[in-house]
Amino acid sequence: MENCVFCGIISGHVPGTKVAEDDLTLTFMDINPAADGHMLVIPKFHSEDLLEIDAEDLTAVTLSAQRAAKAAMSELGADGVNLLNCCKAPAWQTVFHFHLHVIPRYTDKTKDRLTLPWRPGIGERPAVLEELGARLRSGLS
Image (cartoon, rainbow, N blue to C red):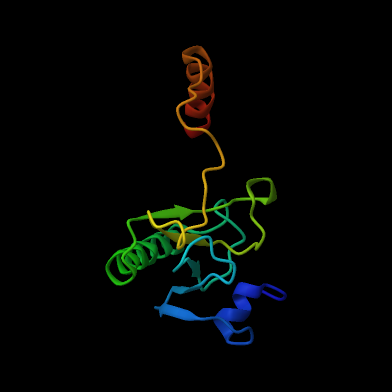
């Protein structure tokens, strides 16, 4: 896709630190990492976001992300891993080529700069959860 930085990394026209590659995916280092070892996993076929990517590419990206997460744990000594996808600009998507962030997490905060963007434990009222759940169930039917 013209003007897509991730397509440029795939083609080699844009520099990137590649970590792993197969027929369908590419894993490379994030240039603005939230933690040491932060990687991005992308499909080689351009898809704008989670709503557009086909099932085969989504499966391949997810499996590559799992391999990257295991490597972060075994090779970097990560204490955990977050997988993150941002779909559409209001959800913080800035590069419009589907990607999963693989973010190693560390108890040592000198290696980990990521913080929670919301406060877990502040629950929603059961009636609101039921109403929202019902609307979502109808959309999945």
